[in-house]
Length: 294
Image 1 (spheres, one colour):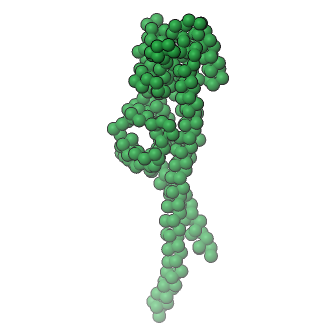
Image 2 (cartoon, rainbow, N blue to C red):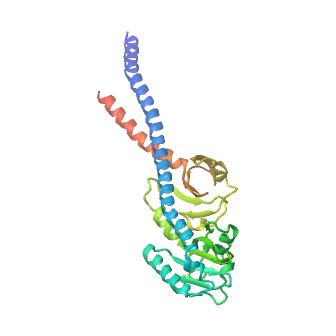
Image 3 (spheres, rainbow, N blue to C red):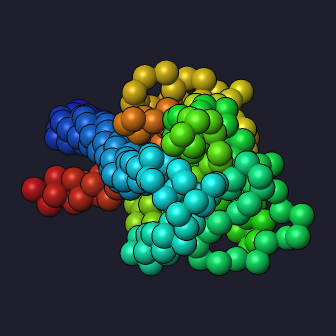
């Protein structure tokens, strides 16, 4: 009799507990997936926002470089027939003071360097041999953006927006106009510390696979064209999953309008799953407390 009674109690308990366990299991599964997707949406949003901010930042610089290449004083700076250099340098000075670019300058084909702010350059400095000059000469008449390089004067790592300048009479190239941008300042501005995950990091890559900007300064200028994440990013935006140093990484990417650059926000998958499980475990406890209390 006691055995039958015990069995009945066990069945009643099982009937009472099973729905609670089933409900908790389903809720846990749904909340896990929902939280996981919410984190992915956040990272997607961060990437798209950074892409828009970089587009908004670089577009005026590209337009300014294009405008300067066609300025009468800039185009006349090689012959300097009407003291064009003096007027041009005053314009450079105004640009630097108003827009806070690292420097604005022109390197002429005879190796003359005219720039603002003034800087002490090495005695053997040759602007025609510099990365920014060569980048512009590869695509005459088009605005070019250099790979990261060390500034000859300060040693700071820069990227430079540049364009060839032609003589107004002969239409021959007389030099290259350029605007310097500090990568450190760009990283501080666009890849700051406003993060949900401490493990997330951002980086900007050009069409050749060269990292222009990265949260880690050691990665500036590194070529990643053979890496999995770069090869997989074939659309204008998306997310790629790949393995790096034994870890599964999510890399959300978005192409920056009017450029061949791609901005990425990367994070180890484990960082997301750990955060989701932490949230989910709290919900499980809450569900159980409510169910038991009921």
